[in-house]
Image 1 (cartoon, helix red, strand yellow):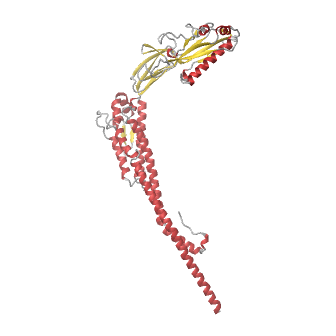
Image 2 (cartoon, rainbow, N blue to C red):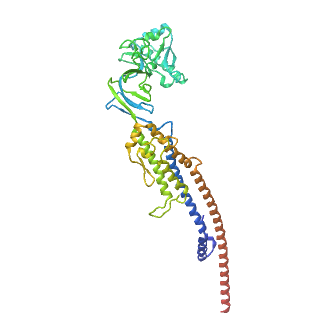
Length: 494
């Protein structure tokens, strides 16, 4: 806050300039405090930037120091070129090696159709006129974690209003749709478990009822309990036969179990023929998920290996994060040799020490590790003269990933591992309530004290200004009075 002389002071410009110069001199301590406050704020900004960089490094170190899940235990999969039948992914539990796979059949949804009706005839109307409304059950798969084979029966009641076969088939479709939607709404089944039902017209004058499961495999099959008067039998929807152009039944053979059903996928893995209810298979090989995509009947191979590329990416990211912190600390704690300008943290031994500590933590040997794999240098990471790290030998790293993942993991995540001890170091600074938080709180306290002193000086300057204005106003008034007296005397004498 500054001070100035308002136009209502009635002081001559000469006195106003004199007061302003006096105040400028007396304001110097306040300006020095303002500069000090800005320096404190600049330092806090630098500390905040360091906090962000350390937090980024801390996150990377958390991944590398996790003894339960090491990024060096990843797996990569290479599928034989030109393969269209399947794709494969693998996690760290997968066994390294070659495998062969032939996809003979994909899992499909169970579909049932009625026999073919002449659309305009009234045979179905006669059935209902004779037997009245009909109630039957549609059974669908509703698996749970505890009971994967669980099923639900949905009751359907049909009392059609239509006259022609096509109209009554439409009435049946609506009745099934309504019953299924009610089951979804009340939580009996989920929306992805509901079957779809429709009336199809193979020709312009024929119609059929179609019911199709949304779930694949024998487990996802449909089931039926007929009405007392055999409506489903009349429709042939539940007939245990292969449907054709005229008769109803199964679109795909349902069978009596997973092995006999044609609804399941069928594939040959490493010489063994297997069936599954889905086209996503995650229980045939441990840690391996196979997506069956096309039944080609052609054998293709896939190779599971250590994920060397992924491990190298992790290491490179680690090196980048360490270098980011060390480079930042060097710039902010040293004097620029070109400009002679001091870094914002150059007078802070805590941060100068951190740079050296991180370098030592990264480069000293790890206790308990085998010879030849107990330093970062053994996996191709060298320390430069400026304290930064550099991956100079990718082959050394990839060899360790390929041949000794356990020792590589412990090099970083062991009790004395590089990532473990660096994380302990960084945690002291970057954790909530750590050194960086303390330093920023200390800066805030200093800034508050400086603000208070600036306010006090500003109040003092305002009082000083008022005092000077009053004093010079009195001087100006006295001079004017004397001048008036002199003029009066001169007029009397002459």
